[in-house]
Image 1 (tube, rainbow, N blue to C red):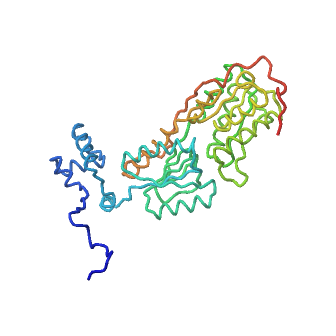
Image 2 (cartoon, helix red, strand yellow):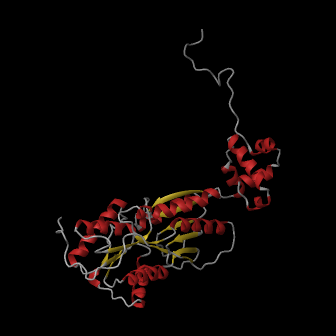
Length: 372
C-alpha cells in the first residue's frame, strides 16, 4: 500500500508548464527575421533603418507574449555585463535623487542596469565600493558629486567633478554664468549687503562656486563681508546630512546670521535646502521674506517651487546632467571617441517670490527674540 500524503512526482496530470517565449518564437509570431526583432528589442543603432511601424509591432508583440530578453546570454555573447556602477554621497530626495533619475532614464532605454552605492563622504568607504562594483563586473563608473583625485580602472564620468584625471570625463555646471545671473538679479533689485552660505568642506562644488562668487562680486562692485559669510559644516563626523538634518542646519545657520548682524538684505545660500531652512529661521524671528530679507538658493529641487514663499534659485538641470553622464559613459563603452574636455552645462536663474527690492533701510533687530 502506498504511503499516504506522499507528494506527487512531477507536475499533476493535465498540468502544463508554459515555455518562455524566445527571440525565435517571437520572430516567427511576427513573421519577421530574428535579426530584425533583435535589433529592435536591443535598441541597436542599426534599428534606425527599420520602419517605425515595424518597431511598434515588435514591441507590442513582446509585451503581449511577455517576452523577456535573455540578458545573461546577451552579456556572454558580447562579453559585457550591461551594468554600470553609480556612486553618490547619499541617497535621498533633492540633488542626488534628481541626478539619479536622469542616469536611470538613459540606462533603461539603452538596456543597461546600474548598481548604486552611497559612500557618506568617507574616503575608505568610497574606495571599497569602487572595488566591490568592479568585482561585480560593472563596465564603468558614474560618480555623482563625488570627488576623486586618482585614475580609476574603468571608464568614468563624474558629475560635479573638478579634477582633470586621465580616463574621467567631467560634467560640470558653469558656476561663473550662475553667479553672474544671480548677483545681477540682486544688484538690479538694489541689494548691496548680501550674506552668504558657503558650501560644506566635503562638497565637490564648494571651492569652484565660491571662487565664482568672489569674482562675480568683484565685477558687480559688491563687497563681501566676512562677518556675513558662514560655511556650512555638515555632520561633525564628516558624513553627509540626511535632508531633515540639512534643513535643520540651514535653520541653525540662519539664526547664526541674525545673531551676528541683521544689517543685510539678502541671503545667497549654497543650496536650496539650506536656503529653505534659513527662511524658516528668519520668519520665526519676525522678519518677512522677501520684504525684510530676500533669499536665493541653488539647485532648484522639486520642493523649491512649493515652499512658502516659493524660492528664487539657480536651476541646475540635474536630471539632464544625469542623463548626459550616462550617455557619455555608454558612448565611451561603445568605443566612440569623446573629448576629454569637461562638458559644461549652463544653469538658469528662476525668479520666484523670495526676492524683492530691499527696504530703504535694513532691519536692525529681530521682531521677536531668538529663543532656543
